[in-house]
Image 1 (cartoon, helix red, strand yellow):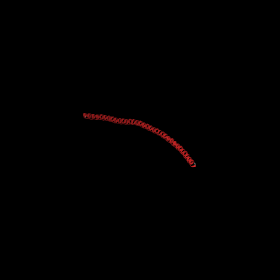
Image 2 (cartoon, helix red, strand yellow):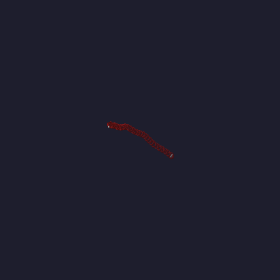
Image 3 (cartoon, one colour):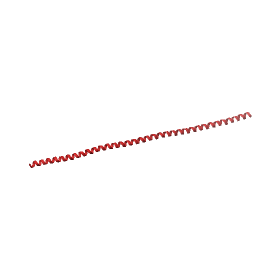
Image 4 (tube, helix red, strand yellow):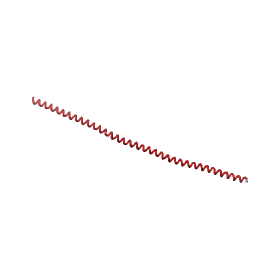
Length: 126
C-alpha cells in the first residue's frame, strides 16, 4: 500500500509540476505575444513618421526648385534687358560715328567746292 500511495503522490506531484510549467509557459507566450504586437505597432508608427519626414523633405526640395526656377527666369529677363541696352548703346555709337562722318564729308565737299571755285575764278581772271 505504501508503494501504491507513493506512486499516486509522485503522479499527483508530476501533474502539479506540469500545471506549474504550463502556467509559466503560457505566461511567457502571452508576454512574447504582447511584445510582438507592440513591435509591429512600433514598426507601423516608425514607417508613418519616416514617410512624413520624407514628404516634408520632398516638399522643401520642390519649393526650392520652384524658387530657383523663378529666380532663373527673372535673371534671364534681366540679362536680356541688359543685352538689349548694350546693343542699343553700340547702335547709337555707330550711328553717331556715321552721322559725324557724313557731316565731315559734307564739310569737306563744301570746302573742296569753294577751293575749286576759287581756282576756276583765278583761271578766268587770269
